[in-house]
Image (cartoon, rainbow, N blue to C red; front, side, top):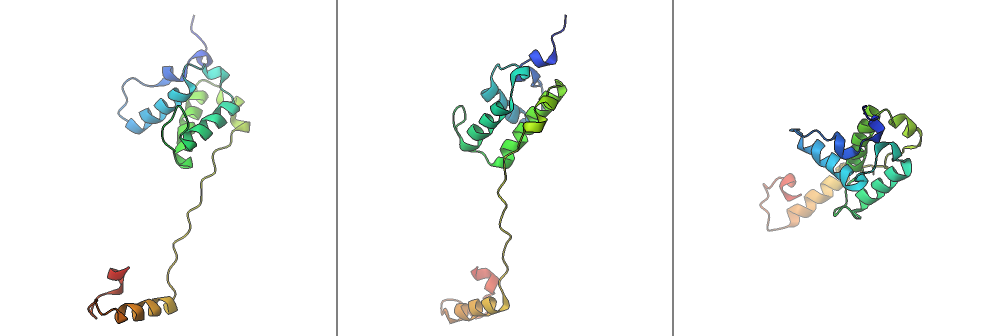
Length: 136
């Protein structure tokens, strides 16, 4: 008699022969944390603990990870739980980690550019033909 997919462990879901190293490493991180926990007993609290430990580099992990990276790993867990027909039990309470917004790059105003140009031209160590971009 076949066991229900929810009674399997994450380690049972890793394909033995995969060429996608990123996928394998992400699933290995999930296995490191969830160990032999059966899929059917994973809760949102377990996922939140994983997110905190993985992003902060706390045991069983050695290095901090960017929130985007942690969210991708939890996405793999979501796929595994979806295949086991269990994700729907967690989906409503799951919250991905917030990802910091990068500051947009600022362009110098014409006034700032002129001031920089004048300052650089006063520097006697630069030939007058040196483009400003070389000095930035």
